[in-house]
Amino acid sequence: MSHGKFQAFDYGRVGNMAHYNQTTPPAYGLNNMDIPLKLYWGGDDWLASPHDVINLLEELPKRSYIRDRYLPYYNHLDFVWGLDATKVIYTDILDFFKEFQ
Image 1 (spheres, rainbow, N blue to C red):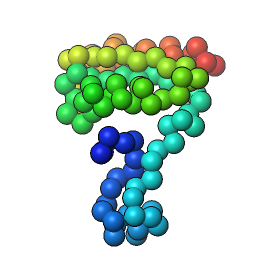
Image 2 (cartoon, rainbow, N blue to C red):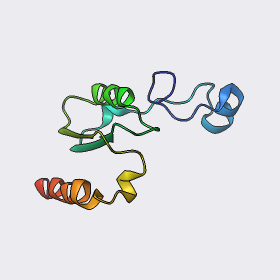
Image 3 (tube, rainbow, N blue to C red):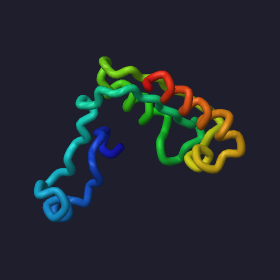
Image 4 (cartoon, rainbow, N blue to C red):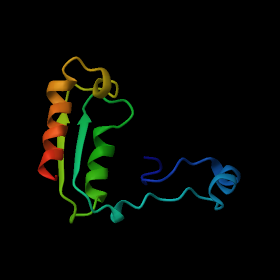
């Protein structure tokens, strides 16, 4: 998240023209998402602050089936390498998928 918006990376006016053919980065079409979502987020994540995640949850369309799980002790790397990630996240993800088979 940059500048309070969910958008592609901002390369600056000249760089944006080269990458996106416009002077500003394009916004992500969050309102177009119409799928079940499960969002895990950590309180100790230096790349996705709780404030940013809450903003994301507010921007997602209300018609989507959304569940989120806050893990206060998780940081960005714990989602991949956390010693308890299988128990805390991966098994839960598989169960979530089974709901929508």
